[in-house]
Image (tube, rainbow, N blue to C red):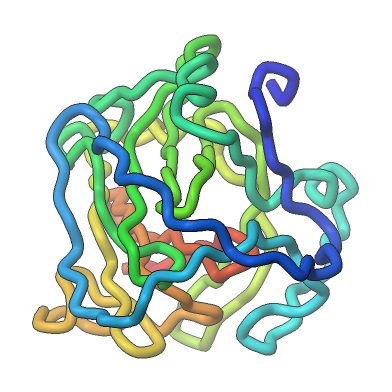
Length: 241
């Protein structure tokens, strides 16, 4: 699978030495993905930044050290797979509004990395295997592929009655396992956590370690998860009902 993806950026192991370079100017706006879309209300007034593509460091951005990865196969998986642009993505994948969560919007507009500008998440399907997943077009450039036949690992936080558990997990290759029951939406950042529907919503707040921006709410019917970017890696906040 990795041989078919052009200009892939793999985020693994250690951080590169910082480069003393002037950040490039902001890219021109990109047309949204085909199909219906919704946006997260953004009242943040901070000037947008253009961060250098992040890499995994030894410690969590929240100060919590990730657990070791004992499984050799899992340890060899990247925490993020990116291609340079949407045109490169479309050589191996296609946009598909019915890939999963068929009753939900095709595209979501939200600030995943907290830089004050909107990123776009849209549903995709691998052209070869037919596996469904998510593509994230970052406002500062690059497109991340989550699922859709691409093997990566994520740091999962399981929330239960007795507390939380932190563990590494391989991302499912196909998001279409519960096509008829699943839905997705925006989990808006509120302080140190997320709230489905934003700050004015009556729904409860879900505290999340390493939060930097908004998240993607993934609801399977009997449980929900929030997929989010912590500045270095993808995380999942697993919420049991």
